[in-house]
Length: 138
Image (tube, rainbow, N blue to C red):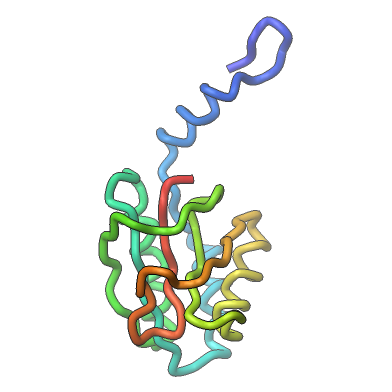
């Protein structure tokens, strides 16, 4: 909402973000599927912060994409301790470097201005998966 100077107050932006739940569009889903098909037989875990109102549905969007490319998906599960990122998305890895599939996911999300941060797995979020996607509050 503009103030007297014509600029937008930060508080109104965060309220607007709360009203607009994060979801992937059909086009974004289709592009992600095309990109990730190049990485067969991947194993991924999806975790979300239950206190973030849209995190469960957003996490389910990603689970659906991963299943569509025939990845082994540990179903989206709530987790209270997740790495924080400004975008609300973090790719959690066991190793120092990103697996090629996770790198492709990160790069494809960037096409849409969605920045997924990368964090080392400190809490065993990956389990037996090569990486985990953590969905938190933006």
